[in-house]
Length: 368
Ligand SMILES: Nc1ncnc2c1ncn2[C@@H]1O[C@H](COP(=O)(O)OC(=O)CCCC[C@@H]2CCSS2)[C@@H](O)[C@H]1O
Image 1 (cartoon, protein in one colour):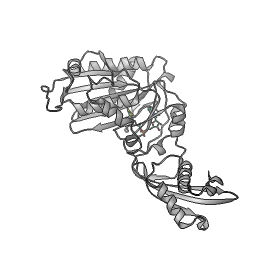
Image 2 (tube, helix red, strand yellow; image 1 turned 60 degrees about the horizontal axis):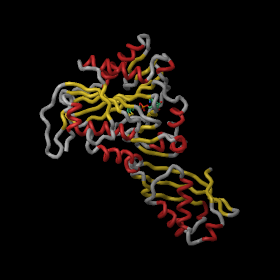
Image 3 (spheres, protein in one colour; image 1 turned 120 degrees about the horizontal axis):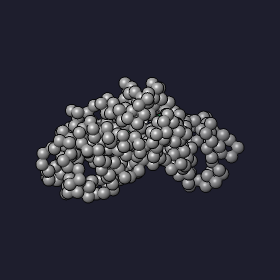
Image 4 (cartoon, protein in one colour; image 1 turned 90 degrees about the vertical axis):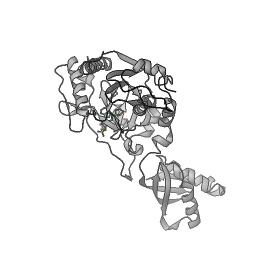
C-alpha cells in the first residue's frame, strides 16, 4: 500500500522501507527539501514521525521545513504541569504537543520556523546542521553575531537564544530538529512557559530557560520567508541538489499512508499527558464547611497522568476515617488536573452525593 505519488514525487531521494512486504528498490543517493503547507503542530510532528518510520536514508537526506500556529512543544520526557501555564494556554488557544525527541520546552507560532534534518544515523551531525543555518543567516545579514553553543543552541551576541535543538536517533535513521525565532510573540513566549504550579517532584527532564531574541529585532530583513529561502538555497548548495522546495500536505494519505493514525495519537490525552514521567505532588488547602475551617494536606502519586494513590492529612481527624477513605478512593484512578481544588471538589461531590445536607451546606475549598 505504498504511495506511488510519494515515490514519484520524492524519489530518487527516499527509499521507502518495506511495508506489508512491498519493497521498493535500493536506496538512491540525493537530498530533498520539503515544506509543510500546514500550520497544525500535530500534523507537522506526524510528518516527522512518518518520515522517521518509513524511509531508508542510507545515502539520502531530507530537510523538512515547518511552522505552527501557537503551540507549546514539550520534550518526550517532560511534565506539562511543570513546564507551562496550561490555563493561559487554554485561554489563548495555544496547543500543547509532546514531541518524540527529548529535551526542553519551546514556544512556537508563525514567527518561529522549524527545520528537521533527516539523515542516516551515521551521518547525523547536529553541529554541521547548525553551521548550515548560520551560513544561511549570514547570506542575508553578514554582520549577524550568531554562534552555536555546546548545548546546540544558536545565540546572538553570545547571549540571546534564537534557536533550540533536539534530536531522535532511530535504529538506522536519525533526525535533528531546531527552532528559529524570527518574529515570534515576545510576550506570549515567556508567559506560556511559566508554570503557576509548585510542589511537583519528579525525575522528568526540566527545561533550561534562556533569554531569547527574535532575528527580526536585529535586522528587519530576517523574516521567516527570507530565512526559509536562504536555508533552502544553502542546503541545496551543500548537498548539490536543486534548491526547489517541495510543498507537502500532512493530511494527504496518498503521500503519507497511515499518517492519520500518527496524527490521532499525537493529539491524544494518552500521549500528551499520559506519557508524563511519574511524579508526586503535595498541596495544602482549607476546606470550609459552615463556620469551620479545616486544614487539608493532599499528597498524590501520579503515574501515566493518572492519580495512582493519594493520602489526605486532616487536622484533628475532622472527618471520620471511612469518609477519608471514600475521598481517597474517589481521587484514585482520576486523571490528574492542574487544579487540585477542582479535583478535590469533584471528589467531595462524589463522596458526599448521598449526604445532601453536608454538600448543600456548601463545602468549598480554598487554596492557602
Ligand atoms: N522557539 C524557541 N526557540 C528558541 N528558544 C526558545 C523557543 N521557545 C522558548 N525558548 C527558550 O528555550 C528554553 C528551553 O530551552 P531547552 O534547551 O530546555 O529546550 C530546547 O531548546 C528544546 C528545543 C526543541 C526544538 C524542537 C524543534 C522542533 S519541535 S521543538 C525556554 O525556556 C525558552 O527560554
